[in-house]
Image (cartoon, rainbow, N blue to C red):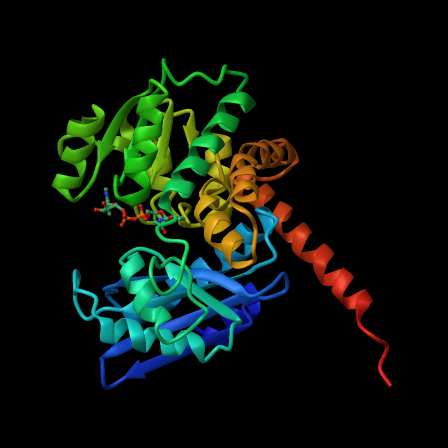
Length: 359
Ligand code: NAD
């Protein structure tokens, strides 16, 4: 990968690397944009097959955070960080968390870290022992686990999908398939079951899937069945990104894709257009899954709980607006990026106009 060229093409402001011989920490922080404010985005702990995969992930995820914050109308930019694990499932330690906290702190508040895959509120608190620029902990930093707000925002986005298709907002006759029933997927399944939907679940971790069956009455899909090829009203990808490409999109038998996973489209331009061509309504991921950012970012910038709840509810209207604007766009994904970029540009212009003329 030509790193600087990629940064130029995607508009990233800053990319930082660290390795700490004391703790073995290897990590990358990507700041995509600080036009709207400091860049808030989770820290992901993952065993990448190659360093280039980690780099690709952090660049892509940080860009998505810029659009997520802008579309949610938050005074925040976009950033993300990844910790490269030597092997899958390596347990987090306080030493690693504190080392990551020092790395975050070295950015002087331009980057604010929080949870992502592999990072718990406890890990956030370990990071927060070294930096005040951490959200998502429960003792040292605050905000806690954002996944209930992410799941609720996604549920609100699903309502917009039904409205856009001219259907009544009634989940009782619907079948929803959830890929990945971890922190967000489980809570989304709970909301859907409470609303009366039938819910099919898959998860590579069998006990996680069993919990949904036993506690919520979901149906677990056996290894012989492929969720993406099931006849569904809504498919909710709630695991990792990059799962929608020309192959999986051709298999889909659902009317709507709306889930919590980040970066669901492997190739956003081509895959977004293919979904539109196939008549499948795609709720852009960074609109549908913004609830967690609204919660932690909202607390960071001083919003009240009431205002945060209103903004999570507003995800329904934002999704609808983007769908309306997508009638002239190549895809709903393109329309969502254009919607977010418009907000960023208006702030950039306002800031430029407010600059004093040079002496
Ligand atoms: P999680 O780790 O709690 O849950 C993910 C689940 O997916 C796990 O149970 C895992 O076993 C399962 N999984 C992994 N690969 C799978 C596969 N191929 N098929 C089926 N299941 C698989 O993570 P989470 O917090 O629920 O986040 C899920 C996604 O949502 C991620 O992409 C994350 O970046 C995104 N997201 C999360 C939040 C949040 O508030 N947690 C906010 C915004 C976006």
